[in-house]
Image 1 (tube, rainbow, N blue to C red):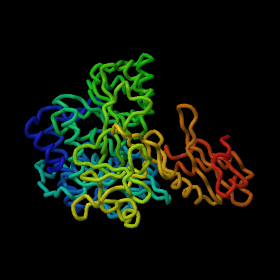
Image 2: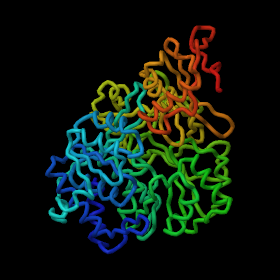
Image 3: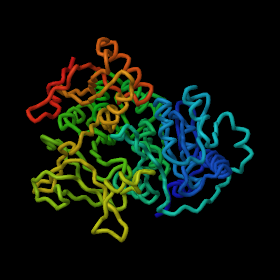
Image 4: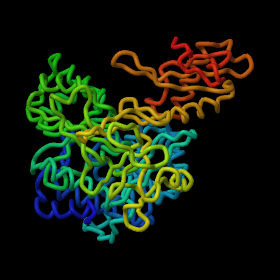
Length: 508
């Protein structure tokens, strides 16, 4: 299967003068995008980039980001996204996962603390604006690096229960399969606008970036942090004639409320793609009322299997729950019991993914890879399936219902969170003896709460310690992983069998 960047090159040859990337008043044509990415790719090659090597990209949403990610692929390497809004300490952990040939960034647009972290890493540092003259010395022609379908395309981190994020590795073949399936299914046409607003640390951003570039459409880039402003998004979607947008359900609800409350109704919007969280069926009726011309699609997929592996076109009769849908092309799904045996319809089991989308495993984590990526008895020699840890039930009519997690992993605003990672970071504070983190739901909202048992006399500080610990976490974890409150307890409440009684933990 042809790598995505080579398919984009064919589109460049077909429509070099067409608009490819639009960010505010800045617009790059397909020809300009190709030339800038080619120059970067040649520079990265001089720094050792190549097949199955990794180049990190630390840039905010911008035209530069699109150029950088495409340039990394043209250099033959896999890209590792580093979100500039995440703490520098977390970026350092991600860079420590394995060798990185280079880091592409922009010293003007990236916080000074992160720049210091990047500069301290032994990889070569490419600052796009600072090194503009150096880049201009490289030819704008394509480097033509041979890339095998099974070479790495990207490495993306997810929360890890041990306190260390884990890096899922995905290959070119899987990414190309996912994006070509999307085009066959949705039929994007030249000139249409696809909004790129998802932080690049989430794999959804990949189809926002690359899908429009495959077919002569436009990648419309939202400003940094703009994905959290529904009024701004409504105006951008309307003025840029965006036809396709992605929302996690929580943010879709906020967007619909803004439009319903008087924000600019996006006249060109035709497709709303939802993933990252369970989609409440009640939200579908709101969307049908507020945006009657937009179809809603529910997609499902973990970072360990290129972007999405199941899809469903939502209907008004999706009550009282929205199905996960059917596998995309090249994917297989199975529901198994505790011993790995297939379960009959109506029985709760674990969702197991197979086929082309399944990734290579976790970077430099062989034990964890062996635990989650298991041999596929139905695939080719060496093929593996991925154990998602998601609990599902398949009904007799074929509909698959999501039932939550088999472990403690949770999702909040589309962010996959292992409470154990937050607990491990909290336990590293000198004033904390042990810690518990949990997601609590009330009505339609959810919040992350934390509890600690202080070491020695630290408990006397009470709320003060809680505020100190939240500041401590903000220096080490993404904002979404910082509990809204951290409370102190003298003793952990225990149930009849001596296990922790989470329900008895105070919420205030």
